[in-house]
Image (tube, rainbow, N blue to C red; front, side, top):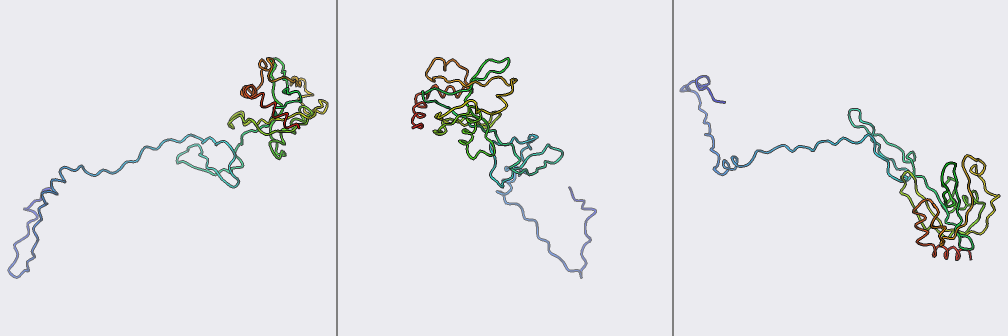
Length: 240
């Protein structure tokens, strides 16, 4: 803005008035003036745009350690809001324990399932882990007694399938059959005709018959086909 000298001019000082010396303005140094012309003006840094979070964060697989809490993102209503959720309230993946059961003749002891309106398929004996089961191996022994009326010697876990998703995690134990009595089987699956049939079937894993059956899950069948000789040998050694 320019200065109006006519409006702001001061009257001439009187003879008795004291005078004040005003320093003349200092001209900018040539290098400073040149730098001011060439350097771009300083800009205020800008933040990246905020990404809208999903309505909920999917829980990770597996339970949290005791005493830990987890943050849960609530549906957005204005400002983002968080609440704490106790780890014990989070859903845990379903776990089951099953037996690759082999009898004294090296045959697999399976359950042939026939449901109304469906083709037959085969499964290994076993089921879900219950709170009263002290270990996964305890689950195997309980399920063998309930589904087959059988006793066995476990030779350790040999296969684990699943990642904790919709089908949970399945633990497969190699087991050597030591006794079986079908009259000791328990459970509604053996008394409710609407659930189909549960027949005990013994099949040589080295036979063409085994290669042709629909053993579920498919990954289990592939595992047995690849390791059938060693599985039979280990089961025989566990029986001794």
